[in-house]
Image (tube, rainbow, N blue to C red; front, side, top):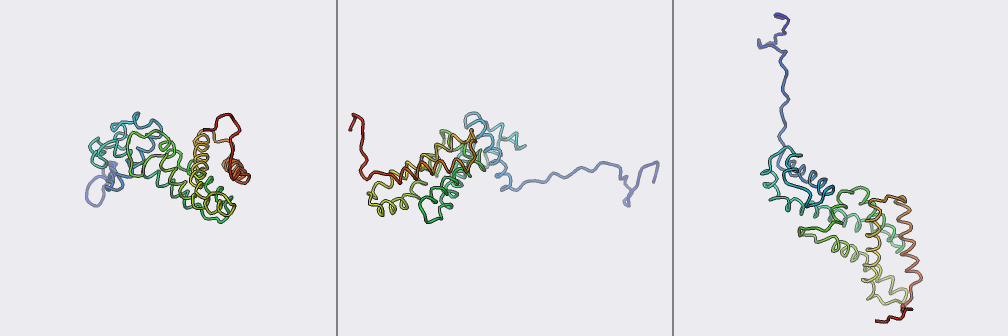
Length: 224
């Protein structure tokens, strides 16, 4: 001890504050950080309302770093949307495991509502009109892809009940579209609870299919 200052073994005073070394991110870590920040900002403000400057500032980097990883805002946005589309498609198709058609409807409804609940920011981005082309297409094309997954199931059910299986694609689009649009509404409403929403969706879809006419007729004046 000298003049109230502790001396370490090297003869230097040990009362100097130690500066924490800043850990440098790897390229993969930086890319993931920018994706997470971009995802949050795109969900809050949309594509047009988000700037490269803001993304870079929140990441604590310069603008060229964003361009280096994604080529600009458009590239970052496209990657974010592609990831969300794949996540949603994987959740829905992975949920279709039951053998009974009504339970399959329940599983599909729950899968979409689970995605909305868990990946709220991602769903907000997907349902916006996208100004950038993605490799996975648009939200409408994604819904069409999901409908294709249940098309074969409906076709078999139609055939067993004496209906025209060629109409299965039409009904698959209608059913999946109904769930998707209800999901957009529930995104902000969040009432009633998820299980109740799923039950009502399946109630409408299943009992509608259960009472299906083999040759539906129009009752109004218009026939074409």
